[in-house]
Length: 358
Image 1 (cartoon, rainbow, N blue to C red):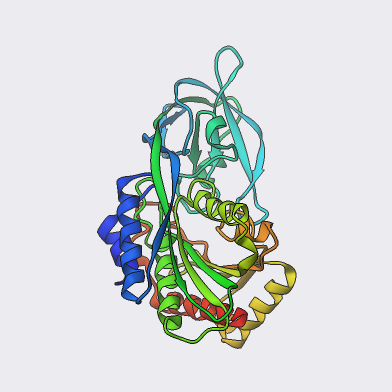
Image 2: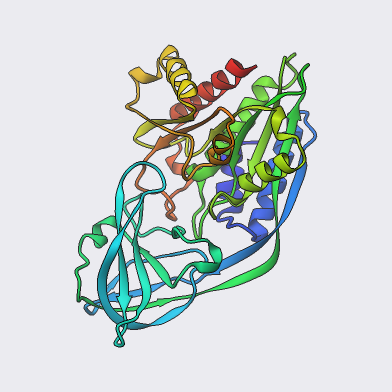
């Protein structure tokens, strides 16, 4: 099974807590079974969210806007006021933040700058689910056009959906030792996003690494994990790590390799922690000849990627990406974007990183 085709074309958009996400988890489990493995589901309850398309009019002109997941509703008018800035989820870029101020002087809603892509993308705010104010995202280009005092009309809305069930999909390749290396990728996507690159490509990469290792005699085991609900603040990977720590199993995690957006993009990104792990990962990429083909971006394994929770708790962790790309989080993120060479190179690097821990 090619999981890019199965998830992006066969299922399509698969937001956390949706029936499409459940269908995607079954397909991933089936792909793991095809490798001769016995997958299991790690289930957890989720407050899901079904976003409406925002409506944004600035000085009488309709602007493109992306929904902010878990935003509270708003339908009204006001004026723009720049109130500050926030750091991009990955990297050091600072992004302008604007308020929509009503006639009484109250900050009634917010306009955030999309951190990636060329469009106004669906994303989350810096706030947690229950405290997210009425918010919409605008593109970086349109953010640069906003000025204090501009008149705006904004409508945002959505439905909070309690009691939904999400599932991480887990399959183990046993080793002689009880320790294991986690190889992970998230399988959910965003509102209206088929998510071929983000992140059906990563899940396909995990499948290919599993295919290369299944049946081999390994010193340490390898655990394949397809994480749910990454697009809502890394919820699936956080649940996995929290449960492992609670049950005393986290000490058996030797390392973590995460694949995210690996089939399209401008630069090879290696995000790794601690520093020695980043140095070793970069050396491996050089040994494979990847630094001759790609411009390299490096950073810590924390931020907006599923390696975050592992690195936060002291596990050597690496995320491999090809990033950025213009279609990120947009409906145009389809299988037509997939570059098999980029995908193959990322899988080769991921496999080498895993083997370095085995």
